[in-house]
Length: 94
Ligand SMILES: [Zn+2]
Image (cartoon, rainbow, N blue to C red):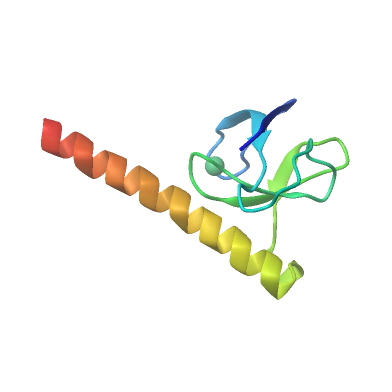
């Protein structure tokens, strides 16, 4: 998975500061994000979109094609599950 530095922006849902973006590892293409690209927040799993100035705004799910929506929701759920499991493991350590 290739990671690209991007203009600093923040997630409109959780405020997480974003300064890099990774491509979907299931796609072979690797490039910088462009306006209109979908972004899933690494911190909270929110589904966002890059604006023309490459800032992040919430992405209404109904505006996505079915395949885009399914992929974004799958990534979002993976991220949220990762954080839940990390939190559970942390609780076991305490
Ligand atoms: Zn977020």
